[in-house]
Length: 501
Image (cartoon, rainbow, N blue to C red; front, side, top):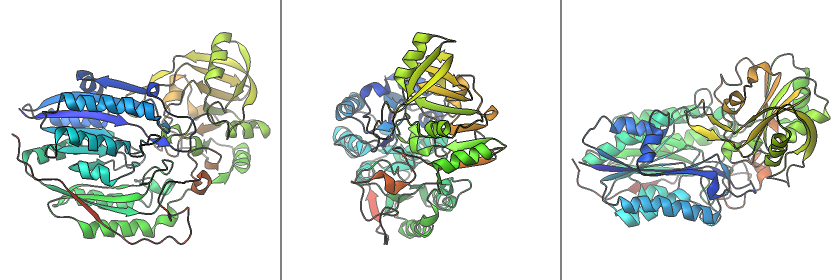
């Protein structure tokens, strides 16, 4: 009976968020609880489990799961050391398995280890040896490295942005792992690094220009030679030595170099279009004030799902300064303000400072007087994948026309879950601040008169030159002028192995 180990570790960090992520910012599971947690969810592991369930001869082993509460700042070395020790302890305890599925992210970086995923894979190989097949799934915002590819038999990336294919990615990874395990295929991977950092609406795979590249990779994966295919655009806020865009194609036995080069060339030709046009902050507020319909104020510079701190009050400050009269809904992270609200109780009126508790160099606190409308524990179910998200103790504050959801810690904001959990429907507000670069269109954008991408300060700003990269390869577009690109394919092939039945 073949045994398959399942481990996961997922976080995306912003190197420009000064607030280090700690071990307490993670939720961990060990053993059978790993498999039980994912049953019925829309996650990668759930998708993999559905495929494995079709093969009753398999023995599935839940090893270890570590999921960050949300993205955040650089992972503290002590925190990663503890997480890595626990992750690898599960590998050691199950070193006799026949195959491994790792569900990772790709943009997790610690203070001194810049490629956390590559480190875990390399250390795993020291434990299980070279002939145990490992398939790794990654977010397309992951930073693809030689270390990851050298120690994985194959890598399977997401195909969609905004991400709606978590489950399908796990299915693809599981099917591929079973084919490798049976000896049916012998994967060879081609990576082509591209010196470009990209952001913006043209990266939406369903509607943007970049979708052409992704569809070409999918067509290859689904073709007669293909095993896996995709593009990694990295996370431009994770400033590490391997931060690049990449084409990745995986084929059976023969390297698909020509097709990888073609897709890379297509991507390079469109790079100028893969940047987000931004509207100055004051101008955005003026447009929103003059609009008659609903307005979406996109504050991607404080996108918690990309690693930002969530404590930006830049748009709030601009709204107050402009004497904005329309109704506004916005989220912010401020644990001390929540405690003040709890002390006052429901219906209490408080005067608190909001913002700048985590990233004080960018955001100065604002004093605001507000009514405490709602209090909660901050635990709620995501409308995106059914997971429970934890924002910590939270409060809804109402200051005249402004409604603020204040959380104790950052939580993902790429859907409406935080608002819905507090009985707030964004569609009834004249303006909603969305701290995510892109959400599924039906969540905020559809029916809006204006969707304004705002040039605000923050550690995940789409104004990439503003951030101040120091570690990523240079020259790189758009940080440097006159960047050239010559495709240099890198090939990766694992040792031959006997099939296991």
